[in-house]
Picture 1 (spheres, rainbow, N blue to C red):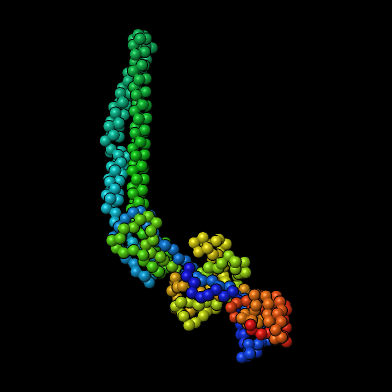
Picture 2 (picture 1 turned 60 degrees about the vertical axis):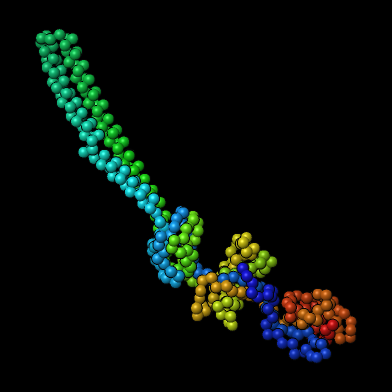
Length: 361
């Protein structure tokens, strides 16, 4: 993320060094100071998502534009899909044919039904004949061999009918299974065809449209960005400073769209993951009062107030020698312990009082 302001770890509030004079001498002064850390970032809506393609294709229609509102299921883009349409029609044809074969009027089932009817008639005939032979045998009018033959014929006819009934059921189940598989193929082709029709997942506003009609799209390529919800401040904070940031801290925000104004905000969330791309941690903040106009993606810079101290002793940083010494008005050099500092002011922890006079070398 591009940084537009020089990193200033310390913001000193209301410092006026009235003791400065033309002789380059001054007294340490007590003032209220505020420690802040810098972060750069951008504006993002609470719910933003990318519409991307899952297939290769050429954009045939792109009915949305930036700034338009969309609802759930609204069409975002259509990719050309002549081959998929043809495959879907073929799948429908196979399914319709398979579905017809599952009805009782299908040729296979009609043929088996005719064989079953014939076998049942034969069984009835053989049973009647067998019963007649049993009666005749009881009267000793026919031989046992004739009765056995009649019984065998009856048993064979019964078994044949059982086999045909079983074959009819197995054939009907196989035809139904084929119809079910054909229907699955239709659903699969319809699902594949749906990949060529990209729709909105939720209500929102079109923030960006990245493609144009006629452009080639590959899987994973973004076509549009949709956003909704409140505007959030996304800040990138360095590893050195993230431990100082807490939810609820005051943030002063400078938006690039409002170059002459700043806006107050508060830290609302600290994301635990490290952003490898930005080499920073991500902090979210919300405005105390929303700016008049907001635009997703607006670049910004901010200072997060992480500490406040009252009545701190400070001197101009230009009076500091080698980072830990000051020159007294008698020409001697004194070592001091410093706290926070920036290019203008340095906090003195010990080594000086307000009554001391220091000189600028």
